[in-house]
Figure 1 (cartoon, rainbow, N blue to C red):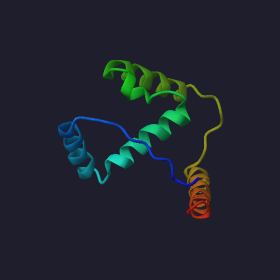
Figure 2: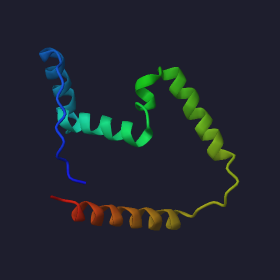
Figure 3: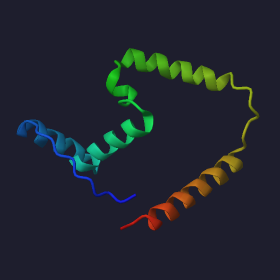
Figure 4: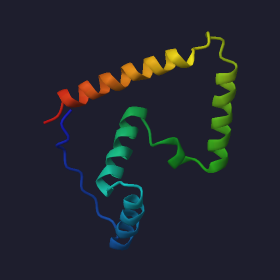
Length: 102
């Protein structure tokens, strides 16, 4: 998918500059951050959970997810199987990225 749609927004210059400095320290640009936010919102069908809830709500959600994983009755997966699975996914993602470059 080509990244060719333009998104513009107005924001206080000081906020933009402070955010830009924080993002730069993480190796990101403001455009990267907006792209991440919009992609996650599109993929998850809502704003990312951590933006909507306080730490306590997120902690409760995370604990519930951990308990759900602990109680999962599906068969265990070996480290080798997991590594192989994600190696295949990474390779497919690389091929997909190269195929869709403009």
